[in-house]
Image (cartoon, rainbow, N blue to C red; front, side):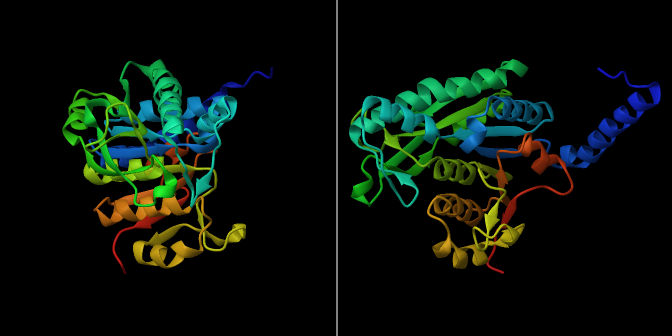
Length: 297
């Protein structure tokens, strides 16, 4: 291993100091802000990306920001369904969920994925609290109108008082996208698309920023043309583009529209495969990915 000279060590330290200085105005701007982060995709599979995400969330908290993490776990759910011999099918980017699959989904999300995320964040303190949408009636939902989707729901209510109490205590809520059914039978959860669950929480919490981690650098105007990446788009422009998007991107962009329509100031779609993508979005001048702006101008 090559030993650095004193001048090289100083130069390296100056680069780090410059990075911290660049972050300072953003730390000041977002201190006390509520930021909802939808965590998913390959960022949940790679151990290195898992830890970099957890470190990012812990950094946000220590910087005085109020982060809320919302997650799904599609790959993990799919693997468990395959292991149990339960068929898995998607329609317009949403998993068809039989009553049997709904129970498995809850088991995987609340019992496995959520625990893993919480434990990683808590390596930087004990702030993270794992939650299902069924806890304290955090997420109340009704079945979607498309009956072919089965036990899939759309969120009608969010227990914002409970979330605010946790945030006021310095906690980091980590919420998996399972909901209780309004007027439904106990023990019969509804599966909620994680993008839409995160958007509903951002909307009801009146979040200052909503970040969605994906497996692509952002939104493309003409996928798979990688030169068509959109850095900024208005809600009006996104509505016009929505019908032409890939089916997997439709729930994400629908979630973005729901959030900005409800008054969330900024929605960002960023590449979760990039280490520390959350910090790059929040604390650097350039930002990354695609920003969706409210309004129809």
